[in-house]
Image (cartoon, rainbow, N blue to C red; front, side, top):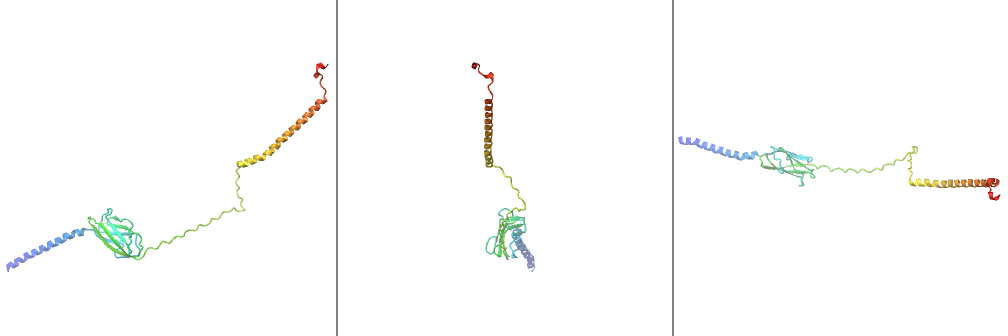
Length: 224
């Protein structure tokens, strides 16, 4: 009886030790998994409904994720399967921002993400949200019709300034040619006046020479 009672505590101790070892192994295997970062939330949120797709999708993690080029990848598709991403994602500490284009088909939007957590291990996930409407089509702008500019007419009461004509070579030639007849007439008149004066003077000299006898001293001595 005493032997059975003494063996019971030893068996209990062995059982407790085995449970502690099993708990330690579970904790040791779960600790690395708990060290990975996790997605805390998104904007738009998972399973939410928004009227229109925002221009940027934001993912917030529990710690700063790797910001190296190519370390993060985000795929966003609409209900028709068309890609909605517009460029590469941008990482700022624990926040990842993915630019988006406008959705063309209303309905569920699927988000697939993959990042590198702060401990260097890649993590990924997936969620959806719903867009209820698409943006309105841009209204075409009317092309303005060019209006005719009314011509400005001078008022009859206001005299317009006439520009002073600039004489050209043709005008100068025509002006000089208009003086030629007058110059010729003046020359002819002067010639006529000179000829008339010459004739009158010649006649007067002849008359004067014919009326006066020759001077005695001018006679030839041989005639005597």
